[in-house]
Amino acid sequence: MRRCTSSTRPASPPTARPGAPTSAAPSGRSALGLGTDRDGLLYVPASYDPAVPMPLLVLLHGAGGAATNWLSYFARAETRGLILLAPDSRMRTWDLITGSFGPDFLFLDQALHFTFDHCNVDPARIALGGFSDGATYALSAGLPNGDLFTHLVAYSPGYVEYARPLAGHPRIFVSHGAQDPIFAVSGTRDGIVPSLHTEGYSVFYYEFIGGHEVPAEVTESALDYFLAPG
Image (cartoon, one colour):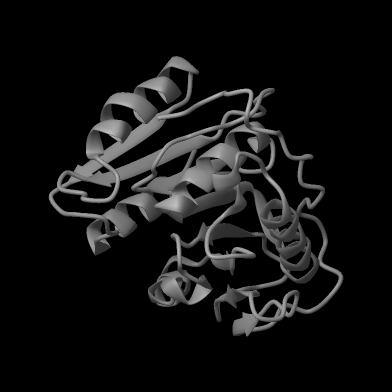
């Protein structure tokens, strides 16, 4: 696990913040229309009422993936009553793998601007999450920007490498498969989670029997954690 190394160049904080929407929210699934070959998806459930702020879950795919990896979450957005934002990385995976935040972080900020312009988002319920490389990115980008992201969700992260200063105090859900052949569970169980506890974060750790994946029961547990009162 790498963390707080001098090789990590901090990104400028995202400028997007929830507020009164300036445009009507598209219903159901829609493309962001912010990129060409690599773009992203926004899903707004049928229960959305522009007069009532709704939770927002931002999900980052794993290496080699795309926003469409999260299609199963659209039905959950309907039943749970939340808005889902799933951007694509600019290249095959998220740019932190090069040692710094760059175009991906800027695109994430653009995607958030788009979402806040179209949707009434609850500022007390904004989660940044992801799987594998996307989980690494969610933790590493989310910790310094906890004044925006109230929750972080990391499914099978590889490491966490963030830049100080940290901000806010997001609640964190982390899961990992005990038989993961890609990223050893020990890196999360014995490295990432204890380091987050040392920093004073509230962390819910879910270790399951399985590999490099996000089983349905893990997803449901993460959503319960995110949407729990208080």
